Image (tube, rainbow, N blue to C red; front, side, top):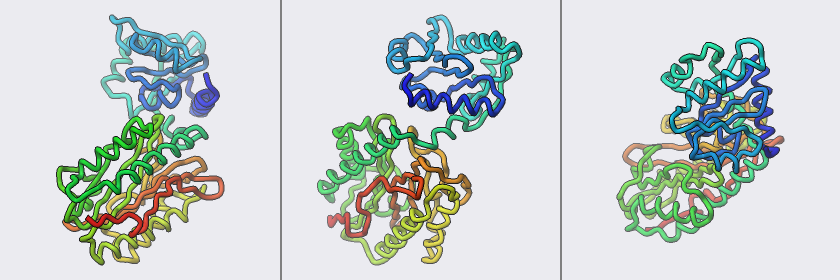
Length: 370
């Protein structure tokens, strides 16, 4: 077991002790990957007093041996089901504890049907619902995670810089998506970290717009929200580009959104509430009369998943901590007209923050005169 994985297991074991739990059953695939390095699916993890146990099937026996040194692997036969293997593993806990073991389960991930299936014939275990036990660990990135995210940001930026000069008025929104993905893959990405959003004109006014065969020429702006997936870790960036048909209203709104983003970034440091950072951006928009056009939270954590904790919004209240990587993405949306969003990935440091993305974001830095 490498040191990085061992540290994660030890941090979770400490949390189990604090909660009075004897073991944890990890069923979420992303959390299993975080704690073991295993990149397959259909596999559970039991963490207790002894060696961690991976419960899987014959498809992954060799992969687990390669990716997860130091873990015990229990492989079910083709005639058994994963719940059967899990029950056997949990029953064995009792012998080392001499009482009914208390096992934490991931209540937000384990379905009711799966829970009831596990409970069948398993009176030897007391299940305890937990929420976000592993996710709270994942909020703080270690050096390897930070380095991997830096690379994912670099790949996304280089792809954008390559594709942008190629775009022509007869390109469709989807053609921009395909070009970005191809460029990121050529640079080592596993693919897009999420389905990119490329919206021209009124399409940009929909925060989660789905790109179409609409041609870009003649639109008044082009919003591009994209990211690379590298080594399992995501980057997430947005730029909104001026086109030939952009007017003064667009230019004014872009300047306000950029001011709001810079104000939020300036507020980021350890101990500051996520709500305070969201408010810093919202106050700039309020002063410009655009607060009602800001229809979502300021951002979110990013890591093995594109959306992780902490939540950067008016209702979030997590204190920022050194090692968190968050997005800062204020936006304004005017239905039927245009939308503007500017987004960067930001690392919280011991003394403040570091913006991991250095792609220019001024109005004239990325201009397509189609």
